Structures are given as structure tokens and as C-alpha cells.
Image (tube, rainbow, N blue to C red; front, side, top):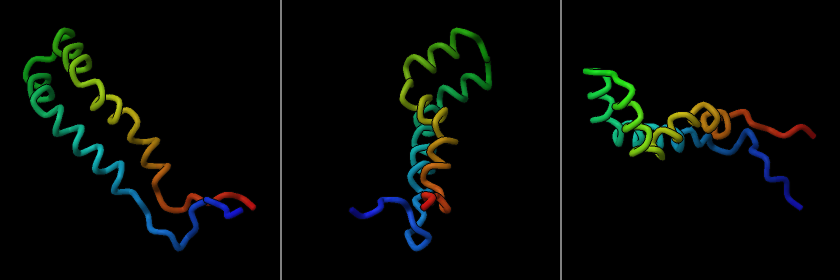
Length: 76
């Protein structure tokens, strides 16, 4: 059976988390502007509650960045 680990010859797919991060920030741009103007607990809860997917994507970006980055190889 073929090993499915990423080899040095396979291209990096760092564009996946980068694209998801940009799309999440675009979804949250109005909420972020409101939070910068007047940060309140109510506005923070509203942003998280109504844009949950974008918030989760932003929170998981470091993990996705490591997962899709170059140099991920399995040990023989």
C-alpha cells in the first residue's frame, strides 16, 4: 500500500488556510469595524454568534497552517 505522507517533491498547499483566513476576515469585516469603534461585550457576543464559522476558521488557522505547510513528512 502506498504511503500517503507528503514528500518533499509535492507542492505546498499553504493557499488553503490563507484563502480560508481571507474569506473569514471578509465575512467579519463589518463586525470588526464595529468592535474597533465601540468594543462591548454585546457586540463581541453578536459577532461570535452570527459569524461562528468565520470565528472558528480564524481560531483554527495556526493548526491548518502547520498541517498544510511544507516539510511535513512521516518518519520511516
